[in-house]
Each structure stands twice: as C-alpha cells, then as structure tokens.
Length: 180
Image (cartoon, rainbow, N blue to C red; front, side):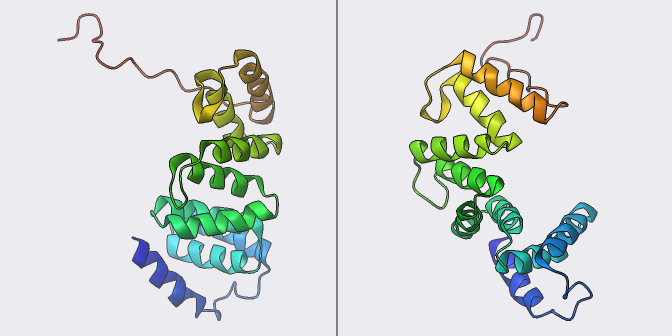
C-alpha cells in the first residue's frame, strides 16, 4: 500500500492540468474531502498533497492521517509535524498519537500526553475524548483524575452534543450467564 500511494502521488503531481488545478489550497482540501467521501482516494490524495505542499495545515494533517493508516509512518509524522508547527489541532493530535504508538518516532508517552493536551485545549474533539479516557484510566502516563476527566467530558459534549462514550468492553475471560 505504501508504494502504491507513493507512485500515485508522484503520477498525480504531474497531472496539474486537471480541472481543479488552479484552485487554492483550501479549495483543494475541500474538494479532496468530497472526493474521499465519494470513494476516490486517488483524487483525494492528489488534492491533499497539492494543498499540503502549499503549506495548508488542515491538508497536511489529513495527509498525515491517510499515510498513518497506510503504515507510511515516517511520512505521516513529517506531515503531522508541519501541521503542528502551524498550531493545527488535528496535526498536533496526530503527532501525539504517533508518539503514543511509537510509529514513525520512538514511543514517548510524555510527548504524547503533552501533544494530546495541547490539541484538547484547541478544542479538537478526538483529542478531548482521548484525554478524557486517559484521565479515567491512567493512560498516556496521566494519574487517574475522575474530576478532571468529567470536566473534559463537559467540554466534549458542549463541542459535540451527539458524542456518547463507547460502552466499556466486556471483561476478558468472563462468560455471560447462560453462555456455553
């Protein structure tokens, strides 16, 4: 998959005669979201790559997401860093997740914790959800702090009223009553 994306990006960068070639970076990124929603990953990546190359932080973060999913971790980290350097919450959060997983960078929970908190303070919903969960479980090296987790949950629900916490996973090794 990594090589497919790299070859696709190289080929599509040459295709600057496409109808959307003259659009600015924000328009390219918006069009990329539409193409992605339609299922045209190749067109979406080409548009995000152009917008990201022009320094548009939301496209840089989105490209980081795509590259992370395709296990092109080093390139994902590079795009996340570029977005984070512009104080883009999605880029900051993405970079924090890479540090939390140790993908493309050495695992560093202190760095992951700091970046997640920074993105949460910028009201990035996924970062707030991650921070809230970490404060409840002691993840990312946080001390368990239910009161602080509850305060973040209030912010999360204010920003994303449809947010509902996932139900807890069933305990491993326990069978449901009546199960064989």
